[in-house]
Length: 165
Image (cartoon, rainbow, N blue to C red; front, side, top):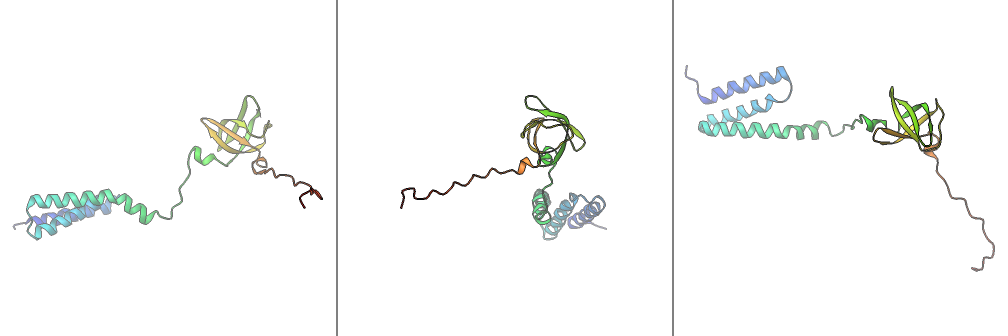
């Protein structure tokens, strides 16, 4: 039985496709498609060097574009997950060591102890606070009620006959 180039490329595409099903990492899929395209080119009479070029270009292009394709198709509505220090902003912590003005103290957040400084004056041990900012390894916190306070200007009393009539 004499095998031709297109049959070998087709066998390679089937083997790579089977590997993709087994591994499911969307890596060998692109090489299977490249082998399938090379089989089509071999069937059309393109030489072996041309077949290798088609296989390489198609596989590389699909492999390189796959992250972008999947990100735009499957991840377009995904919410970005905050992790690490970014996730602590706005969370509640408990004062473990009183926060005094010059030195600060310690707070517990997510089961970890962090050095902290207060943005709303001295805070006693056991008080719940909100993380407002992070500077290096130090958290800046304030009382939850203080984080929402807004100083409104006091209305001026009306003056009668101020001379602007």
